[in-house]
Length: 618
Ligand code: ADP
Ligand code: HGS
Image 1 (spheres, rainbow, N blue to C red):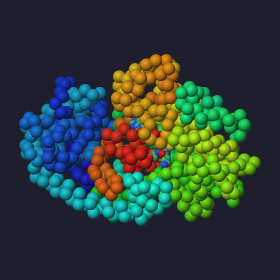
Image 2 (image 1 turned 45 degrees about the vertical axis):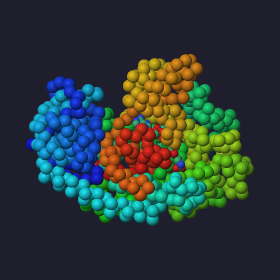
Image 3 (image 1 turned 90 degrees about the vertical axis):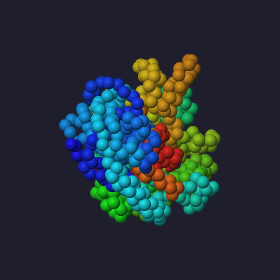
Image 4 (image 1 turned 90 degrees about the horizontal axis):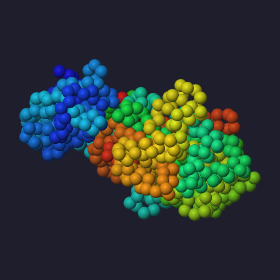
């Protein structure tokens, strides 16, 4: 009999549950003796007693392997499985499951007749085992009661959490209130958040943290290789007018011989824990307008507060919460750049959107900068910069106010340049002696095409000659492909025939631009239609689709909570400052965990797909 330690979100830890059986996937069989399991995994659902729908839950056979288990009773009815978050078989290699047992609970059919174990491998269900199941009604009553207790507990905790969030500035503009994105203090609502932190393997978290300073250096070195940037983006430039305008500004700076001696990077590298490969893989690195260093630090504080107060009820401990200094680390980097610039009368200019739902994340940085250093931050849109900015011997002035640092929280999307005025403003800022964050070369170094080019054999190693460092960085690279040149026809065919395994990405930032699922093949087919269309392939890169581990989380939006199956994306902030040859700052600068419902393709918080969360290291 195997004894298991069951961990999971939303439920107090359940210890030593007996495994009685493994279950068959819903109605699909193929007889194939004892395959070695490597699977896609199926979701679990809570039915809360009415067991009409077929159910499944994941069984963690090996840190990265899952079994897909369905209940399939002889009588055709569904069984209600206890919600088991993830199970760890502490048995041998874990690769070969062999027979196993799970307690099956059913509100309707107290005693199941039989169940069949099927492992899903490469989308094929393979018969593993056929077992007798037993069900324990009494446990189910216990379970139902526990759910009621949990619901009451969560109902009790939510107002406490939301009070904390409101009182501590963990807020965003409420989109349903007119003017909430323009009038500060008007129409605030708590930021979308997860009530509890989400478990994240400590080793993967540390791997991501340890990559931050390497990526800071990589971005800096790539940004200085003007030929590499221009060549890597040359074909994109022909078919993507936005990237072309950014490249034009880059070329203009080269032609005018205007170099930015002081480089400031406020980056966020995003990762997913890909279940199929068991690896921590980089989604992308943001080198412009990396948001949520402010609110990301606050959600960590909220979770620490909630676990200090209610952790016992959930078996959660504050020791498992990593410190998160993102807000102060960003403020420190901005202050050091101001100091390096060396004009104490100058201020930091934050380039923002006219309407900004995430202004409090931005104001938090400005407030910390004032509290810690003290330095002033002024906010202007690109249009206002166009109207108010001027250069005197390259010194940037907004009106009569000298500017030392330009920090972009806008300017990363075509919509930020509705007219030539905004482009002229961007060019003027780039020509100025102010420290731009990012400079145009840092902005381009963060493009998805550059991410893909660096993944090509030997390219990363050109910028990271230290073999061990290059090996470490390359290990975090997911599959990335160009749609042009050698090998592209084959990967395009593969993506058309198996679109679920890929994501098609244009050179865009800010969320909502990528293409997923069946749309990948539709778009690729469309782009292959004729020569002209084929030219547009250069606007995209193809990326391996990652399937993160599924958790379940209490998501809070607009004061309402719901228990959902979720996946998470870990962002690690990095701060970097170089003045000429002198690297003043190169740090890992805290983290952000964004959690979304598991069947969502896109992942942005501001775009409404994800919520703010924090990692619970396990
Ligand atoms: P953007 O710069 O627009 O934010 P991203 O590349 O970060 O674009 O993608 C946006 C979201 O799409 C991510 O937050 C993530 O949720 C999802 N995503 C992106 N790439 C992948 C991938 N390779 N596999 C799975 N999900 C992905
Ligand atoms: C701001 N409104 C990013 N930045 O960090 N996206 C999310 O906050 O200043 O919503 O999940 C702007 C991108 C993740 C944020 C938003 C990198 C923005 O979208 C800036 S380009």
